[in-house]
Image (cartoon, rainbow, N blue to C red; front, top):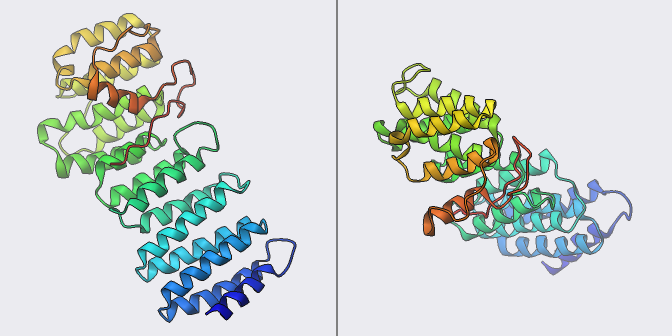
Length: 328
């Protein structure tokens, strides 16, 4: 096997210029044959050796492609640990190169995520680093496209709560709504069908994403089998959200204030609603921030986690307010 590694390294060293795709393909063929024979440990070590050789030569793209194909190969043979290790090397090649964030790279990362054992600690570490890289150093909480792809995978796994989190940081209001319809129908009480979408709309607004807030509300209320056609709706909370979205477009504080007062009985169903509305009042209606939050502890931490600390950013329909990754 040492001779095989040396031969593979010589392939890696061939061709000083360009990406040398032919050399990569020849190396892949040798490694694939080793895996197919069941020599998993030896093949894994060969991949790692070649990775560091490529990286030392500045061949980041070749290193990334080889690790990506190797990870897929190990996943196909149910070698989760080796596959996860090579997946982390894919990220390392991206982090150490000047590769621009591109849709094909985001799709590759999402593919690796989808193949990892949902309960593995490696998956949590992988998604955290992937989101950080995808932000492009902007300080945001990851690229919206990657969040969307992660949300779809988690939805397929019926991990609805984490799927919802990632949809909130995407721009896919329609996908979020369809997931919430399934979530509510399969896991929720009929009496809470309105609360599933109310929370999503309020949180989208807290993240200054008016467009997705509107889309998730319209799609959810049209598609949920337990919601009669509206507006107006049978459920007062849905009427409140409908009026709120109209008020956000108008930007009149008096309308917002009266609306919140009139619907207090509905808003008291969840103690977080008024916290979200305090934030929405600041963002869209010019309400000054409170000196102290009316909630501390767990509720305050939840609000801060969702909305981040971007107090002075006026950009709407964006992902400017970031928050820590909370996947557990």
